Length: 309
Image: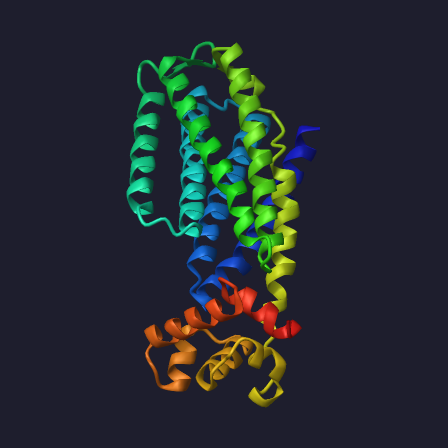
């Protein structure tokens, strides 16, 4: 049964890597900061899954798998788990356009490092190699409390964001992120409650199923489908763009040209080169277009143009 679980985990990781690849490719093509931040969150969680699979595989297949190796890999997993939450907060603060977000993220990164320091300190998670167990001390409890509080803050931020995108084409994308994050949050709370009731972790119990892998895989499939449609250049010309659409939002001649280039799948650098303007000018025009149409990303703009709404 354990080997079937590893096979499942590997399939999930493959789906995640495919979704991550297409997201990164689109982020590079468009230069969208929100999408770039999303890719960071998704990549870190993929790393968490990969490390989890490695832990299970070593336990099941490597004779003489040492408690020290298990302890070190567990520490690495803790690092990436903390990093996922910090990256998620960064993603959400950027989506809110909070001016002080860099300072806030710096504070979260600092507290994450301090928490990790507590975990590996003599009052944190201490390895008993002879008994093949890790004793979870007060340092670990403090770090866990910080992690739970930070994750709670991220989930609150996330569900608060939904009202901002509810009437946009990003609604489904954002709901998927939030469902994925919320299931991970509930799973985390359950894990912390179990740790609170038992101050020791044993090597022989490293077989828990990661329930958040289910929404991760489903969301990965959604992301692949969501972005694949944008990789096929739209075969439209300026005079074929919906005149009612352009007139409705007061799109200027230059903005028409930029919308056309976007619909053809061109990046900001490509558009700047084709129109002989600076990238900053392209970004300014896109910002104005977004404001007129009521979208906040390149892919929302594409959806509106192609639907003519």
